[in-house]
Image (cartoon, rainbow, N blue to C red):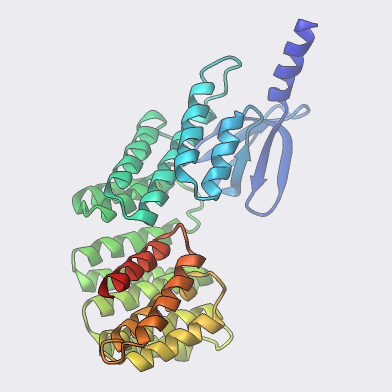
Length: 364
């Protein structure tokens, strides 16, 4: 009886992995034997070995995954970062005990711990959490040099360095990311991310012309590949350069040109443009014009989306400024910040809204 149970346990680990492909396909009841940056290999009961480019694979679910690992992923999706980190650490410890979990746990566990610290830092602007995220990205990269998360880890690590203003380390990390991307047969959207990060570094260093050059490359790439979400991101980045330079006429001309060139049915891009124009007006003290555009975005854009969140904050800012001459406007500012906070309780937007609400309370 004891040997039968042992056999069944081992058998469940041999045939039970599931591979999810980016084209929507699923392959169940396989055993994954290789899961790295460039290749995924597996075998089935009937086929000895199947190999494929890792860029075709969206995710892999392993049959020997500890329950703590699954709990950690659920907590991560719920943005309960502290609980998620505890679970992932527990899963790494459990993996060392019999029955031994395959090596996949080392890269997945450390990567998810890093991502939790990183997102937690983004939502709280906590410098120490960025440093912890960096430490786990580095632990993963040093422990498994060909990890499935090679490019992602360098990408996110670069973002963390930028968040703590470590420009030299950010450039080193970006160079490592570039080397990783060169190994790929299909670079997918990595070229876009590379251009965008290069632009972000130049922007932080106030090298505006170089930043614009990189963002324009990102825009052209997204346009050529017909990646609308990436195109919108590049447009926001380019407009932000003009805003940071305080070159409002160029910013306004840029957003109006994009508005004219884009289709009126592209609601998300129209929201990006209107928010950009609203910021131009806000920075120049034209609060009523800014408010009008922000309210249009709030009413027309996707519920809970990035552009609606941005518009809620802009509207709150407008009413705060208007309250200097008309104190009654302060109540309207509170309403918009409260809406933003409720819609984004565990995000950077929620934090910004809470900070503004605290400042308004102090004024009273």
